[in-house]
Length: 210
Length: 320
Image (tube, rainbow over all chains, first blue to last red):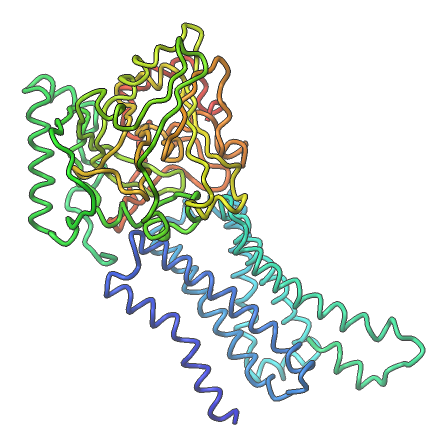
């Protein structure tokens, strides 16, 4: 099943980009195309971050452990759309005005947050290969990749700080992220709160895996 | 549109407003400018007829105005499909659809507060107070985008004079209609409804301040603030209240809606000012809809020659 599912999901994950390109050539981006591209790539970055974070709860709760095979792909798509979002800002919005961008990163807290979220994804993307898991060792690799919690949180804060008055959409992302992070906290605390029935070390690893 | 080539003349080389206004007065007066603007619009309509499929009724007897800019007018479809009109929706593309059946007749405007006589004016009475003029103004949103719109209306001062405000009236407050059956956005407390805006009396009496009921030669589309709005071109767009049902004269400075929502971010004056940033983003540049490169934002949105004297001795950093 994975053999077919993975390529299907791979192409499905490219649909948002394909739609953007199609719209760009068919006057479908509205009155302010650059704003449209910025918002679209930003939204998809957050969506893929949340999808990536939902793999572990999903596979544990449904006992569909094979789902782990999809996690890296979704994570890399989050990085992919994040990169497009970042490039839209650097190229289309600021037009490589590095002075203005430095001022932005330092002065505009929503940009500081967004930039942080993006930068934190870089080491994760770079160390996403099997080789790097081996080189770092499973435990250390796992610790490093918990940076995604910070990255996704920074991304959602970036959105919250950006809107003028209507917080509904960023709060939807915040709600989902909170649920996904809460699952980690519960999964981490649960064995500690049940001292009467100590878990085997193996079961512990099962529950607390990220 | 996205990959459109930048104009040959960078915006920085365009003659500043005050230079060409002076020269214009010096040379030939307002008539030439009006004709030029009309020709510009006319040529544009010939070149891209798809953007000229309008919806409303033509307004008769529109006079040209010396206050009009000769800059390229933003296409009608952009100005009518990219609207910050939270009473309908927080999504800019949605008011075009959601405002379709908004009722603009009958429509009464209450004029009260510090006036000799409180009155309720019918919209059609207001529209006859003065001959309609076309005013092609730059319009700069606090979010960092801008458009050029051929508004139709007359100076707000025409109405204020007829309202007979008392001597102690210092400010004018404008209130937008509150009607959540017609305005779905008002069902959510995104802002403190109804929307309230205000101007200082001398700002409201300034000839540039427009009482507006049309654009592109036609009735104002619902999503752009029909049937009656104000347009204050040297201030950020949110100062230009839409669908006005009440005009109140006060001694105290009105509290405007965005100021209630975020006092640190949106002041009472909200003059376009590239040197005073929004706390969360820069106001130095703006994206003119339809252009690829951002252009520098002009002080008072380019209307400094006419309005800067209103703010003599004021710290615009404090009175943002």
